[in-house]
Amino acid sequence: MKKRMVYSMVLLFSIFLMGITISSSAAPSTYVHGIFSQKPLYVLDGTTGNMLTATSGNAIASWTENPLASGNQAFFNAISEVGPDRFEFRLVSLGSTTADQIFGKFDIYKNNVKVASAIPGTVYGLSQPVGSYFKFYSSTNTWHVSGYITDRLDY
Image (cartoon, rainbow, N blue to C red; front, side, top):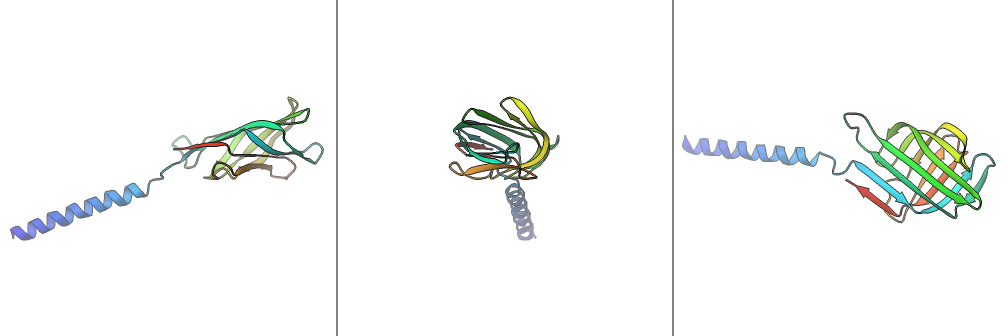
């Protein structure tokens, strides 16, 4: 009888430990992300249709992959200089996020004048490592900005 009791306790303890191991491995290891770019690539000027090579600029994206109790959160801003022109892309309304993408509506400025308001678009390539690039395209493919990821933080 005593042997059976010890066996039952060991079995119960083993099941308890397996439950902890399984439940802890199911939790996401990271779900808050941020990428930074100090090396812009291209801008597609939606007012002219020209694909332009950026000469300088910065971009930052920060987003949650899994919904928080308050919902997904994201921020995106990219500024690219192309000769005398300055383009800025701003996320103004968040649709949704994944580990790799931010979907939403964006305002676009050219030389500090708003030239596109609340246009649907996607920032993607965000899960790539440093040295790879991210891209933004409007849903109509008339606007674009891209850059190399120069730093990232995931936690």
